[in-house]
Length: 368
Picture 1: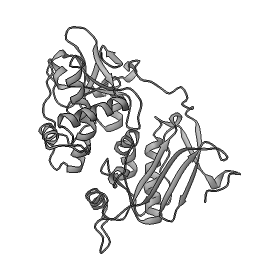
Picture 2 (picture 1 turned 90 degrees about the vertical axis):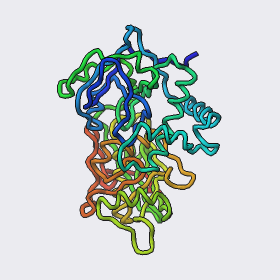
Picture 3 (picture 1 turned 30 degrees about the vertical axis):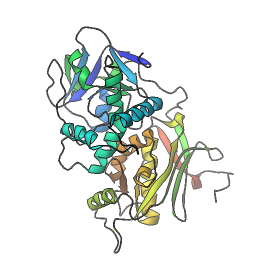
Picture 4 (picture 1 turned 120 degrees about the vertical axis):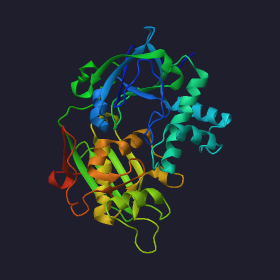
């Protein structure tokens, strides 16, 4: 039995390349994809165009026989089952790292020059086991679906290679003419999402070994967003630190392997605050604080021994919003872009006001 199938009559794919009427997956010129070896689709392509700067045409896709497509919702339980299966089948090693067999599959499809090995290992490990597991266990399924809003953008899905022959192009629309009022009902907005005139209070502190940034829902209230970064080892994430540092002229101090960095140890955002761009804003402000107080960049927690980064945090790292504030590789490292102008926090997302704690009356005791 297919777990929690989601049926879609139509989906859309945005590309600058020409899609034939009957689909087939060709090698990608990109370095990686959150959907892995599959065709990325959505029901709100216009929002993805805005989020990550897509161009070309919007292709409407539908089953050739007129039946709805079937997609499996991605859940943590499904990901755990897929990972266990991939270990048994030889796609992952016993420690969860990728095997040569899986990397060969990955590089056969993603052929971008200069692809970072650590990026390929990460994406192949996180994405492909689920694709392979679904293909083997439920071949009647067309693909996967991520049904929730993230910092990167709206819900999205993928059509797996074995199912592409069932689909065909039914319509093509230039990106400039697309109207996202056509978005279908699968978009799930959190009913607790506050109105757009949300006012938050910013609390931040330079710690003995890092920085802390918090957003409070009112001066006497609780934190609804937190990001904590602490000093990283000189051996953590060397390649990504050097790569990002070179873009802004930041080099390692004498005797060190890479530019100084703080590792993000805790990043959280209350569900009612998601979908507003606040996750990316928190990471950007953390990068600014790291530079102001430590002359350092920030790196992801899973770039440190035993570290882990949640799916939502990964989306914030890759979001277009974050890259407007910082220089980043989109996954592992980021540094405040305006190194000579770091006195002011980045502008808040549209519809949100963020007030520094000093500018409002408060009774809450400052944290030690």
